[in-house]
Image 1 (spheres, rainbow, N blue to C red):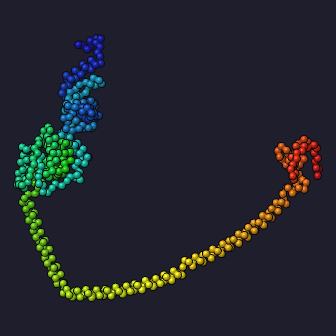
Image 2 (cartoon, rainbow, N blue to C red):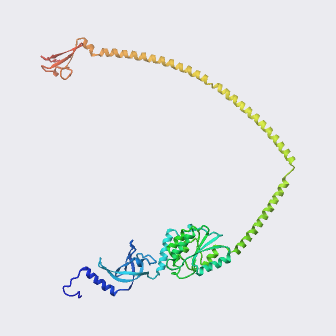
Image 3 (cartoon, rainbow, N blue to C red):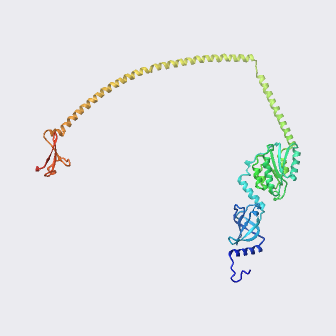
Length: 449
């Protein structure tokens, strides 16, 4: 179909599909390098991110099937090289790179994954020395987690047979590289922890590349070793090889052979130590016996005739008896003197005598109070009579008895003292010595003086 023909009208979906076909046919396998940004890991398991440089940016998606094979975790700012194919996301009309593989630019993916996991577990405290437990000096049974066909188990068995042939060894065969090896190693550590007779666990393998040793850098192995209640010795690779398992283990050995030497001392070393300790013990015991003999001789010389010692003790007993009797007599005399002083003091301070004096004093105070009360009442009676007489002299009733009357307005009760308060026809109330009367004003006379 000629899409450039006149009047050829396309829907958005059709145009997008045509563009997607062109891009997918011409950009099928690409390698792109740039800086990561907007990295997102949704719960679906897919990974979405943008890869950019100074002049442009490209949206990318890595689906779950490819993302789960990554050994490292992508973060913003990381320089990355990706391989994929160009396609178009129809819903947004944007072209994007569907990534099938990714690796850090300049640094291997395994090395980045190693550093990321190392930093993560270190932050959680899995490498802390406070969590590590000491390896027993004389284990009875050793659990070995390694490949049954590798060189490591042969080296371990050879060294242990030479150093301590009677030591019991329990081999837990596992794969030490490849898909699923890490889970086998972790399961072996967990199951050996369920055996009460295993005293120490040795985990390791021979040397190899970083990819070969990668099973011992998996998080599942690190956490199994961390949670092991039995001490774990890590012996992975050569002396220069370091794995995550080495950092978590209670003890790290540079090689499997070195681990076998660390796990238990050789019979010859133990025999030499035993002889040295035996020599030190004999020498110490000889010195202690000589010192005890010397002290015993000194005590023997210090012991005298028992009869003389008994005489001295009897004499001392008599002396102490005399001092005791004298002391008792003196104590009795002192207590008798004190008793007599207390008795005299008690008689002087006899409570009955004090009570009689207090009773006499109370009677005196009672009699005096009664006399004063009578005087006060008589004084109040005289004052009351004087005040009563004064009130009778000043009483208005005395004035009314002499013929006077009190005039007040009949309506308001106001006392009238001047004719200016009256008018013709006003009603007045008169208060007399006995009773009262009502009158009306007929005429008024004004006193001109």
